[in-house]
Image (cartoon, rainbow, N blue to C red; front, side, top):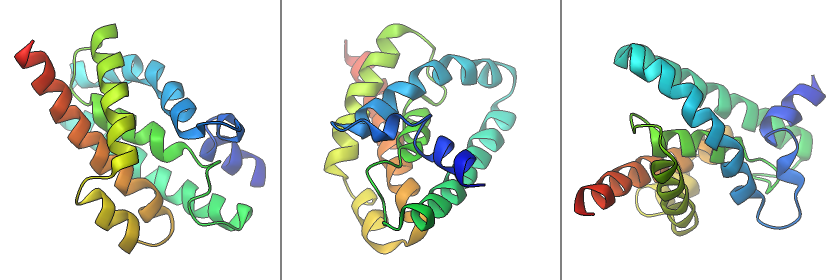
Length: 152
């Protein structure tokens, strides 16, 4: 079970990149933006259920990876960035401009961790703490991306 957990948690081992693994983990998620857009086009309710299930699965995988790696929120774990980027692009039209702007805003917010992302990061243990702060940052990035395109 070790291999599949680490494969998923590290985004296909991208998390082992020595510099900026979170950024590379977010890059892994960009193709998923287009894949997930098909689900979103078909059903809003199904999209929300799928996103919630992906988030819960990511929390479980991150928790298992922490045990294997013997480190809380290891830099190698990037499944949180993947799910966070999906939050950043949730219900956006799949275009390259949306993909890039959401990516850049998400990376900044994931690093800055505006409240309540910082609270979640500090207070929740295990996989929930690893993943949910990125989801919060992703939702903020989603709103900021929408605002940026509204103002342009």
